[in-house]
Length: 112
Length: 114
Image (tube, rainbow over all chains, first blue to last red; front, side):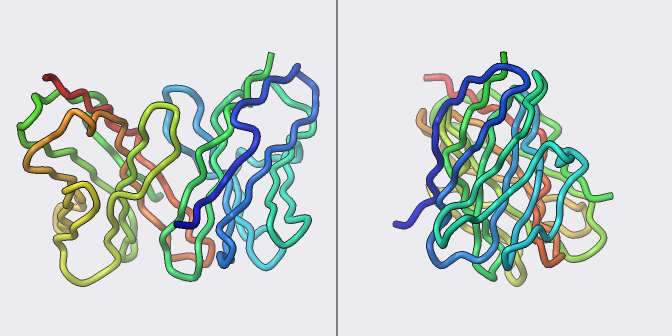
């Protein structure tokens, strides 16, 4: 069964450093998402991406964040200058036209 | 504003007992509703979904959920819980916008006693 994959599974970085989280969505999916889950809190929407552009972003998704689909398979989330409060689990998700999103296993980001 | 409330942060049931996890939503239009399960260290796995039609939906692992528009609820049930069901359960509402983003509840942690 096709699945969403994410790398790395765990990323440790120093405050102020740039990180790139990578996702490979399911191959025939058209909509792509990033969510995050701070430890002990709910899963929060960050951004959605369709037709090679951002279709919606949350208040959390400020100028420090960017997304890109550099080729036909990868979908990346970049944080330019990480802050302590960026420490969280980041989930990638994808879907076709129907409204069922399939999630990857997540990347745990730890900012020191 | 759209929101999802899961009133129970933590629930403990005995193996073999029945289970009901509560979910209430606030959404102006017809909602798309989902239940996801997250095992420790794992991603979110879809248990079941409601888009339209029959208000009682069946999912994987023996779970079912009932959509009650009058109560703005979408409670998850299972008649007999197994130890492997111990996990965190998230209710979510999908917006009907083009983006289809999901809004999640706080989650309910299920502990299963032997």
